[in-house]
Image (spheres, rainbow, N blue to C red):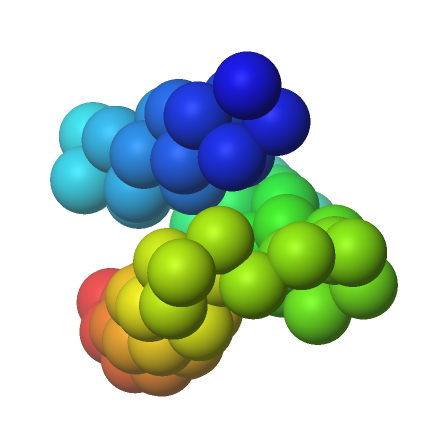
Amino acid sequence: MRRVSSWFAVMAVILVLATAPVSSARERHPEIGAALEALRAAKGHLESAAHDFHGHRVAALKHVDEAIHEAEICMQED
């Protein structure tokens, strides 16, 4: 059950990344910044999970790392 909840949390963050509008507030891209924080927190939770879930935890970590990388690229864009 926890694995499913974690997977949905990661997918929700990715959805936020895909639909985040650009802002000219203090931070250039506040939604992407918030998504990056959430992705990094999700990565920490996955890394400290007690089970491997037959390789699914490692796969989820790979996807989160890829999402972090893409979000970091977004932060560099205008």
